[in-house]
Length: 596
Image 1 (cartoon, helix red, strand yellow):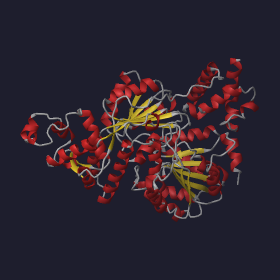
Image 2 (cartoon, one colour):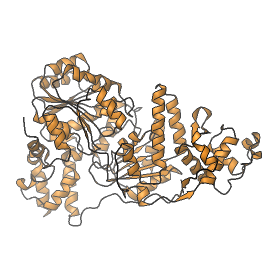
Image 3 (cartoon, helix red, strand yellow):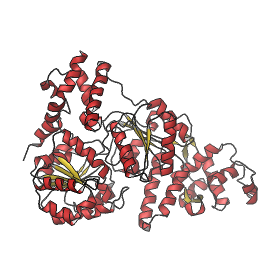
Image 4 (cartoon, one colour):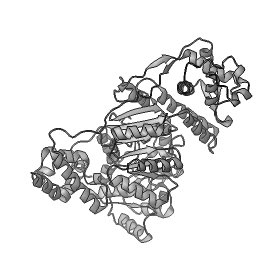
C-alpha cells in the first residue's frame, strides 16, 4: 500500500492533512468502514481519493448528479490521477471503453450514479474488477427524513451484501443526529467508525432580514458588496428564477437561470459558464448546487425561505469554499411560511413525515427570528456548541434592538380569536388599525372591541409582530383556509398576562454592512496577480476546465509572495503536486520572469 502522506504531497501538493482527514484516511486505507460528517470545503473528497490511490484497485465513487462528474474527473486528471465516469451522457462505445479500463486495472477512481450501481451489468463488471473502496458521496440522500432524499440511494445497502470485503465510506456535509442514524442503518454502517468534524464555517457571515422590497434589497446588497463576484441566488419557483435572472441581467449583472424545467443542454451550459467564467450569478431552484466545487463563490442569497435548517446550511455552504470571507444573505416573509406549508400539505408523504417536516420548518423560522447569535443557533441545531457569540453574523455585528411586545402580542392574539380564527394577517391588521373597508363592514368587524386598538403601529410593524408570533409558535397558519391564523395552546399565559414577550424591533437600516471581498496583501504586486490570473484563464480555456482546476487563488497569491525562480521552488508551493509542477511550472515561471 502506498503511503497516504506521500500521495498528499506528490499528487495533491499539500504537506499536511487537516484534522480529522488523517484519521479517516488511515482507517479507510486499512480496510475499515467510515461515516464522515465534514463541512463543505473541509476536504471530504481527499478522505476517499487518497485511500483509493493508496489501496490496490479502483475506488468507486457514487455521486447523485451526473452533471458534476465531468468537473470532478477533470480536476483529478489534472493531478495525473486515472479517473473516469460512467453515465448516460456517454456513447455506448465510450462506455465500453471505460468498462474495459476498469477490468484492465487502468483506473484509480470511477464515478457512477446510484441508479447504475444496482444494474446487473454494472454489478457483474464490479465483481470482475479489483476494487479499492466504495465512496458514497452526499450520503444524506439516503435519509427519508433528509432534505435531498433520493430513492436510488436506498438500494446501496447491496454493497454490504455483494462486496463485504470492500471498505465503504459515506460522506455528507449536513445531517442531524436522526439523519446520521438513518444513514448508518440504511447503508449497513452501524459498526463503522463515525467521524464528525463539526459544522462551523467561520468565514461565512450569516444575514437574515424581513422582506420589504426584495428586488431593492437584493440590488443594494449586490451593488454595495458583490458588484463583480460569483454567487448563487435561490428562489422557490421556476418562474421566479427566470424572472429574477432576467431582471438582474437588465441591471447589469451576468445572471443565468437554472432549474429542472430547462432542457439538459441549457442547464449544462449555464453550469459550465458558472464554473469557468468569473463573476457569473446563477439564479436557481434547489435543483442547482449539490457537489459544486467552485471555491470562489462569494455569496449565496435566498429570496425565499428554505423549508429546513439542513437545506439552508447545505445551500449557504456553497459560498466561500476557499476559506475566504463570504456572505449567506436572505430575506423572507410570512407568505413563505404559508407557501411552504401548502407544499407540505399537498405532498404524498405520510402524516409522520409531514409532522417531521413541520417541525423542521418551525426550526428554520426560529433561526430567522432569534435575536441572539445566529451561528450559535445554527450549530446548536446540529448538536454542536459554540461557547461564545461568533462576531460574524448580523445579530453580532449589529445587535438586535428589542421592545416589550407583550401588549401588541395580546392585541394580535385577541383580534384573531374575536374574528373566529378565520382570517389572514392583512385582514387582522386592518381591524387593529381601524380600517372601514368593505370586508370589515361585511363581517361587522368594525363593531369588535379590538377594532382600532392598534392604530399606533403601522402595517409593517404589525406584520412583524404577527410573523414573530407565528415563528415562536403562538399562532399556526391554516393553509386550507387561505392562511387563516389559529391560536396555539402556548398563547394562553401570554393572553392572560402571566408572561411577557420581547420582540425584534424592525428597521430597514439594521442589516449588517460588511465588505466580504478580501483585498490582496499590501506586499503583493497587483500587476503580477492579474498576469498570473490571465495565464491561468488561458490554460483553463485551452483545456475546457474551470480556472480553479488549474490552481486555486491561494496558490496564485503564494506565487506572488514567493516569486519562485525555478521548477524546484515552484514545486514547493501549496497545491502544486508533481503532475502540476511538471505541467504548469514553465508557463507560470515565464509570467513571473517577464514581470520582473
